[in-house]
Each structure stands twice: as structure tokens, then as C-alpha cells.
Length: 104
Image 1 (cartoon, helix red, strand yellow):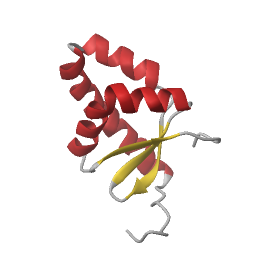
Image 2 (image 1 turned 120 degrees about the horizontal axis):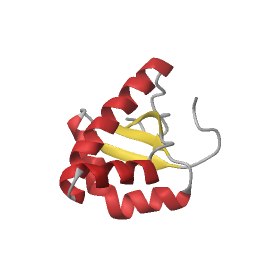
Image 3 (image 1 turned 180 degrees about the vertical axis):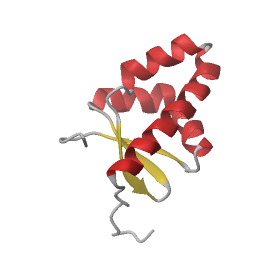
């Protein structure tokens, strides 16, 4: 990707399908990492329940989360799970961003 290029913006149906695929892959990876499905589901609900895929940049999913605190926690504690899940669905990884206007 060119340095000044904008991230690829996805259409609404692609966003929903991509988030569903990422969610399923994330739960599989987190089940192994966190020691069980209930822990994985609780972590998703706590940190990513309001997440939205907002685009793709340099083959990394751009995922918007509600707060900087959530973004930092995901990066520091669940980064490996997030990368594994993104790789499972065909991306190099996931970048988490915050900001106004969660996509609908």
C-alpha cells in the first residue's frame, strides 16, 4: 500500500460478514489461550462486544473499539488471540482504533 493511501473501506454487508468470521475465529483462539469457551466468550463480551470492522489497511483488519482503555487492554493482553484470529480468516493481523462514530 502506498504511504498516503487511505484504508480500504468495506460495504455494510461485507463488514457484518467479516466481523462474524473474525468473532468465530477469535473465540476459537481465545478458548485455547484462556482455557475454555466460557472465558473466551466473557473476554469477547467485555472487550469487543461493541467492536466494528471499519476497513482494511495493509492487509490488517481495522477494528474500532469503544475506548482507548479497551484498545490498550486488547493489545497488551489479547494481542496474540487477535492476530491468530485475523490470520485464520486471511489477514496479517488486526489493528484496533478508537474514535467517534461507531459504524452502524
